[in-house]
Length: 284
Image (cartoon, rainbow, N blue to C red; front, side, top):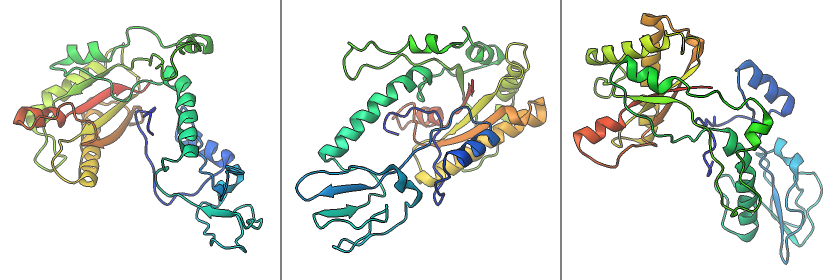
């Protein structure tokens, strides 16, 4: 999460660990291109030194509570020795030395993924008509077709530890779509702009391409409310393209970003409208 590898990251509260087999089945059923199976290990910390830093088989019991006493039973159902204490973190990792090592390893592991994944905060231009939309969405070069080509983007081992791999560019465009205040109703003044998107997506170059529509809001209002509103607005744009232009529904994915990705920190009317944008980008 710190490296923001993926354009879309959704965490559903209350879900349980599925295991590799069930997780793969679910990912295939949803048409996912990549499954990242995370494990949240428990840690044991000795009173004098660190021992047994983690147990990977503990992830199947994330809600288990263990009292801190000499008779405590650890997640692996073995008694905890007297010189150990058992602890759990539900939110962020602390800043202790051991956790810093974990974060450093995680950053290093993120390097190859960055070479294969686009940057989530790519800066897209605002489109005025169908020509702008088509020009910004049409790929200019085919994506890497082999592992060797993707690996060629990785930084050399002699580079600095924090060297960043070049991330592939995914074509996209911003739209200045206007909605009714605090609603997901598209104003008629924005219909011609959305018609430009429908026209561009119907061209031979873009027809059949999967796209992602992202909704954004300005900084006003509650974060949770804005997140839901931006999702509804993205859904409204999708409905317009499906109903009027016949774009297949399964080719369009929607996501709401709320106020998490502003283009400007300004507070003028123009700045606020710029942040209340709709983003359209290719999904592949």
